[in-house]
Length: 439
Image (cartoon, rainbow, N blue to C red):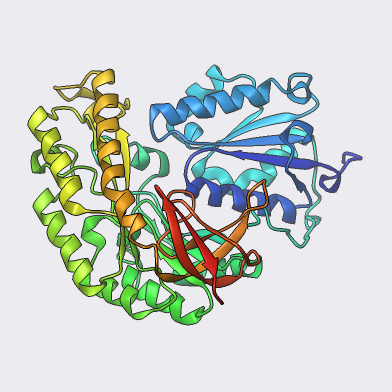
């Protein structure tokens, strides 16, 4: 038994990539706290630094490697006083090869093994536990935010030709409703006022449960159970937008009238090559159906430019779709050629510079379409969830039309974090809004 127990040791997290990784880091941190460790905000002084990596595309992998090497360069790590753990997507994607490439790391924890984080850290620090001697402590919030992400499923069965997620996260599986409700209760007790339901494919939730259910039923259930919380659903594939889901969103005042639908492209041939269904005309019909039911809805999508075989005509069709769809927010990415995916070996690979050029052209077009839609909100009164302050003291929050981390914020003149205030919108600058609290 070592003389220094976990209660004298600290662990810091550096989280790369998407919100789903934030949730995983949060859960690992809480497990460590309940085992007696403290969570540090300063990686350079922690006894263990966990880099929770993203490896969805090559650029994300490179950013994760940079973060790992930066931690490896800390004096505490390089001199052997602290330990580096590489967790998440990179160990899941690259397996044993990663240990050979990154000898600086003391341990590797793939996504599927993140529940073992306490054992991993114990072993690195030489901490032994007698049976029944685990320390149970009240965990403090690992992430102190008024919004919290709650995962409703993991994995994916779509196997889109460009995507590595099924190989990293495994097959799709819904989380039980009781577990989702418990997680909502947990983050709400820590101060969250908005719950963002996330997954690789939120629209499929419930279809694989022993008693099948649906995302519409989930949304209605949680909204009814927590009437004082906002709920938002992200990343719903087009097929997941059912009439029942639209109805559930429209009928609950505390559910954000917001649909995040990753179309990825508008050309039917390209979509088929991506192993996706649909077409630009079908997507426009879907958008019209949503708007008919919820006139004040906010709509977001993501698009990929420069996919293998994308001709000039296909690209022009995508541009036409952006203009016709008239969306509120559009995320645009150049196609990333990823080893192990079916698209990697497709004919018609496009030059990197051309992919970047096409992506930028779509971004510029998206700005021209979306910014006026944001500006059209000026003059309205909306509820705003107060999030915090900028370094200069400026208060900011988010309206229901603004998802965390991706859509911009609303600057306001009064309010406390976690409070919902009524705001008259008075100005806009691209994707940011500004307003005055009226009640």
